[in-house]
Image (cartoon, rainbow, N blue to C red; front, side):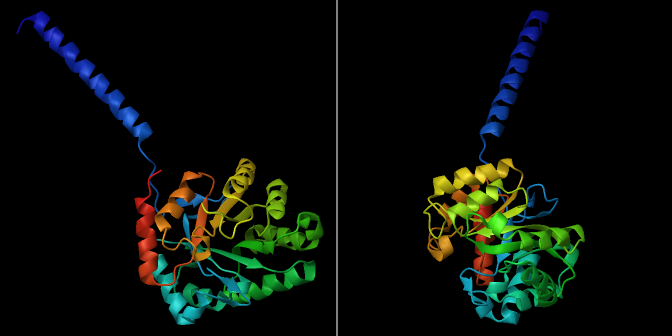
Amino acid sequence: MKRREFLGRAAVGLGAAWLGAKTLAAVAVEAPAQFNATDVVPLGRTGIQTTRLACGTGTIGFAHHSNQSALGIQGLADLLWAGYDNGLRFIDTADSYGTHPHVAAALKRLPREKMTILTKSGARNAAGMQADLDRLRLELGTDYIDILLMHAVTESDWPNRFKAAMDVLSEAREKGIIRAHGVSCHSLRALRAAAQSPWVQVDLVRLNPIGAHMDADPATVLSVLWEMRAAGKGIVGMKILGQGDMRHRVDEALKHAFSTKVLDAFTIGAESRAEQADLIRRIAAVRV
């Protein structure tokens, strides 16, 4: 082969390689994002890292009863064990769901240090919150709670009105009794106050594409959530399936949750092993 022909072919080869690399880079940039329920994610600036999906225990939960508590202590414990076997390390419970005994039964067979337990208290004053700190840990069978939230807050002035209860949680965090504190909001005005409150480390927020059981329309809520995210708060989504209203539109709901790019994690309450496994599979199939 002549030198000129060799150089020409080499140049063509290099050019093709460069174009190929450029094309691959473009494809990599444009490739849709992929998620897994078991992805380990940080919750804001709390220092807590846990799985993207939490095992919810209160699809519809109040008066110490929920869809999941109806499974019975052994039934829900079995479901939580299945979640662990499938790679989930995050459990969402609450005093009002009546599922603390069920979670306690599950924790007897789970490595506590690998689990993230989020629960919620309805207390609104210092005495009530202090009593709940002791009672909830006893009910859960654990010395500490990873995330403790003030539950179902609706008032616009809640950071001032309930400061005494908040101070109890702040002291508990300093002592290592809890790792992070915050609120679950059940009104737009409470959500806006949470976004502005430096005390809030984690917020449990309602979000789905049809606005079912939310604080406002999705666009309005998202504008507040972006303010929260900018402040470094951990944002955990709930009502992702609209409290069951989107049970037959699961893929649409999941794609919306991921496409917003504002949630650190989210909680969904499965009611069977088959439903849990299907949810994990569907999350892995989402592309945004």
